[in-house]
Image (tube, rainbow, N blue to C red; front, side, top):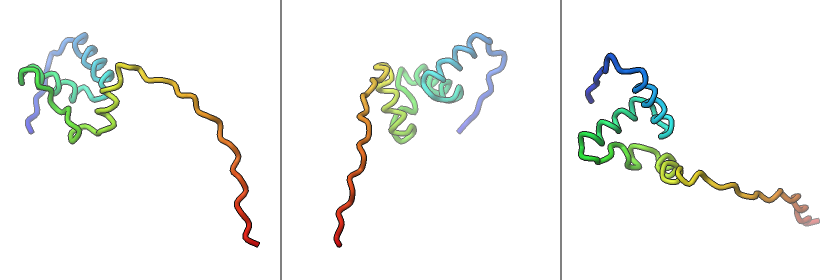
Length: 86
């Protein structure tokens, strides 16, 4: 794979990239690859299949807009005594 270095990047643009990467839970480099891939491949997202990202990450990104729910967790009950075989 090839590498590039981008010099003289505007500070505000770098800040926006950092924020966007954090929102998507990835590095700035990965986010830049995603943006370039989308722009140059006609909107096809790069690296969104489960083999490149973990299944948990894909599911998290899918349900992130719903902001989650709080579940009521029942308190644990005491464990009953095991049977005796005397």
